[in-house]
Image (tube, rainbow, N blue to C red; front, side, top):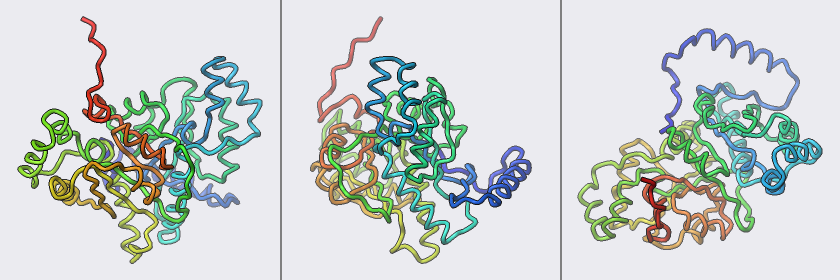
Length: 361
């Protein structure tokens, strides 16, 4: 899984890198601009978003699929002065920018900030419309990766990505296989008002923050065996899941606010929203987080109840879950949801095994 970036580990050619950054900083500081300077990738929490998650490109995608890439590029060039509408990741990105503003107030010279990278397989000709749209909404996105039809996944590690958000389930699966936290984003069925002062992130537990080891027992042996197993291994931490390192990155930034006595006014709030029962299987989850040195602000154990109504109250900027039926229920009630295609849950839907295609001999 993607790791938190080192703050003191030796880096090849570190002196040369520091010289380059010092020169870049001096140049940037001399520019007359209200836009803040991007942080060093080595210290930043890097969020890579695809163009179709940042913006609603449904109409443009239809042209691409029905008429081909040349018509698609021509359409984008012809309409490059028209800003694209916000997509599912847009509120999340705005909330990240708000956290950065608060961090800069408390730590003017700190490089420990969110850095947002546009990661897209769009062609460079489409870049002008993307840039115009970003500037139209006054978004702070300075790093682009446009791969001209090729998959951008190979660049994620080079950009030191902590989280990758895409509309392509295949690309997200590929990123997770490469050890990078990733999820497929979905636009909610209705719009609800979200906080503009606090980043709110909700996580499922098993197969998201934690591995799917316990979920395998539920699926294969039932709840009673699962409860017995969790009680027996209550003091054994669960293995990490694909999103553990992103929670770790959020916690690192939260502690910067706590150090300034801003815990009660922290612009980041995290939620664990799990289908587990608290009394029967909750202790192992909380002890696992404690063993990792991590915490969540709120832990909500639903004992199998639907997550949608509770998420409607939380109003997160993003909700991560490995089960598509939880994603579907959440987005029906207005929650911006992100599917994590990881673990045994991908073989099931609403508890029933999905028929797998026969393997070719």
